[in-house]
Length: 229
Image 1 (cartoon, rainbow, N blue to C red):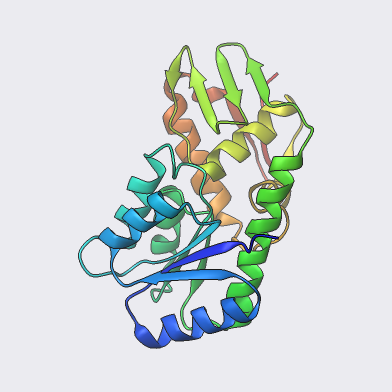
Image 2: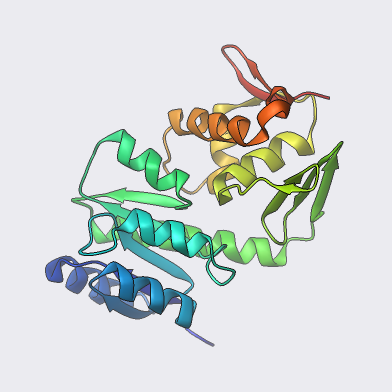
């Protein structure tokens, strides 16, 4: 059986040593690199199952690596966990908006990182095996779950993975109100600790990308959000 592969993009040798040791002990095949340019190149050439990406890197930082990765066919759906020494919520939000699937704030325990990696791998496996419908059409809005693509009137909306999952959840049940907790679960498959407020950030980004059709997503005060039917 082929080992799942993890790419560690981190410039602190002590952190790299801890991550590589613990990941390999769990049975993962691990590559590591210390700067953004090589990290991006290695991610696109080797197609790892998960990328652990430091925010503060020499040269190209983690935000730019994630942005460029998501712009490439080979990296658009690659699971990315952002590692950040900054505890400020703005950095977390920026990382998620750039397309990161999850984040871990330094200092972190190896056990926490391993739990996040396992969660993303399980979700990825479920998505491959899922027999659910792969396409939704709501008026001129079309969602393709196999490609993680959304178009409105034929124009690409360029959603992040989290934004796509949120929009898919809402549009799959028009008129049904989803609480923030339910939407967090849709983003993370119930296996991550993304804070509630980031749902609001994602919804704001979706509305901005919907433009004149932003009214499709309605706020239900004190509860959550729904897609208008």
